[in-house]
Length: 289
Image (cartoon, rainbow, N blue to C red; front, top):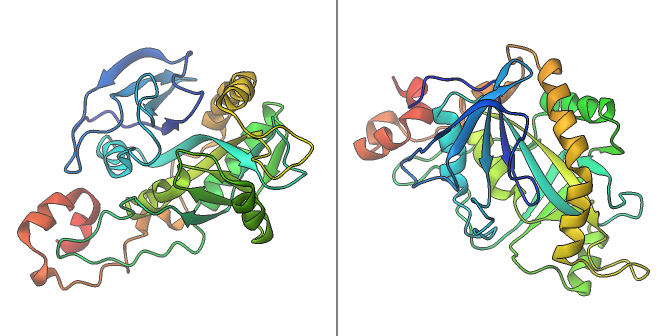
């Protein structure tokens, strides 16, 4: 475990693979009980604060949304002392008023994935974590302020539906999600947001709208080229927003994220296998001692 504690951890998605202004950067080749994270964690200084960066899809974007080791990524950031995780992701819009180039800070998520492990728990240790409001409201509010200060066109709130991928939606699926009242669609919010809550981390998403998915009859269906073009255009505002966010974040957290497991563990301590207790000590040790 590294003793350098990041003030902010950033998980970069499609189109954001580095933080160019990170100074004195070095990499940490970490391992976890759940395997290796997607890439080495890059740690450096930005605006006088220690910042960690992790490329969700690996160096060169070689890991599909289903294949991302979400547990290893979140565990790795927790292991170096991160308390806040900012997710950068591309998304499609399911609303006419959420247009390409806009940035959404969602407040809800629907998990429509089918092939992902969504919890750290199991193997003799059961915990039922509350995720009624899966994104940290305090952190998301400050992120929205930072984006506005950076000049972004923003939307506060909205429901992010996570699909399995890696394919894009059919028109039938896209129209179904719209009928359900979903706001944006992407492939990585779940289980990342749930694992962050289990790890007692504050988690917020900067969701870049790159397209209208495939529902909008007057727009071209989404393509990879379309996604990357919009993300490249938004890179400057994203970098500036991260800098502004560092000035807005308080030193100490006052939200409930820091004790999300306090009343979640239902297994009697004496019934937890020693191997499982050791494996999850970073997450639950303070509640079992």
